[in-house]
Length: 380
Image 1 (cartoon, rainbow, N blue to C red):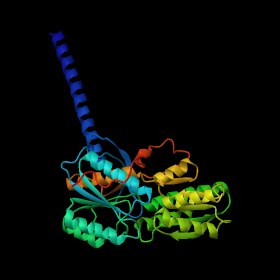
Image 2 (cartoon, rainbow, N blue to C red; image 1 turned 45 degrees about the vertical axis):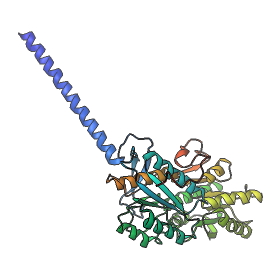
Image 3 (cartoon, rainbow, N blue to C red; image 1 turned 90 degrees about the horizontal axis):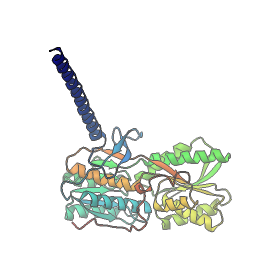
Image 4 (cartoon, rainbow, N blue to C red; image 1 turned 180 degrees about the horizontal axis):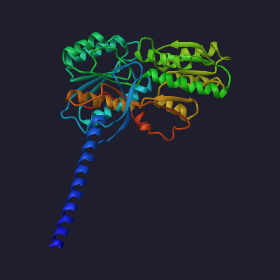
């Protein structure tokens, strides 16, 4: 009888231990699911990336938390989305083009892309969006804006029609956007300025800099200027020339040429947009000045990547443009389907130079070399 009691007690103890383990396992699974669902909206990921989530959304002081972004497996229906970008003269937007199209195909929605031909063409972008709202009746709009406030009346109309708007990359100042998927160009300028500060400390003497921020009136340019100038303030870095212009190589070419002509014997560094940096590297090489004048870009593109690999451009920060654009698609689908989404999110920015260019995951920032501009994921 005692033996039976002993066996019963042993069985009861084992049962209790198993029960404890089962409860613990259940709690751990529930906890893991809760964390993933809250931070990353788990869905059997095909891609993931570390992101910054602005808290609160749209704050200008760069306050954010870090999270892991995990996309949806698929959309619940074939939503019809229209995306608008400033142009394709800057290969930054080729990266965005690729990310938008690839994610639209993967997630199972229809996407049509419009490009306005340049930052001087605000009226064209306005007409494109107005016409699309009137005739195509899209379910949602993704907008890389030419002007931070120049589309506000049209976005108000989209809001009245119940069409959500996701602000992509460039920053729109409007109460009628549903979400912003954009890194802060203030931070991009800040990181570029920090890199320049380190370069100055390494060289030892004052540096004379020509600065090419991009087109006036674009929200990202104002932010980039703020970040860059605040970063170098108080350091022996002299900005001897500042030239604004459309972010295309043909527009930047005469601006770079003028700076080189005016300050040929004084210039130490050229800093600017991706087309500015690429054009500067080309002109410096042609004039035999590549060893005298360094070049920095304050954002990344396929052309900048090539320049860094060839030693013609020192460095540039990247907002992981391909995956940034994928997140814009994923965010729009979440909005349309009433799922959880971040109101202001972007991949964490990293600076790329010769020291890490061969070790980072470039697929987040660059399209395949064979990719060409594509305007439809499929017809509506």
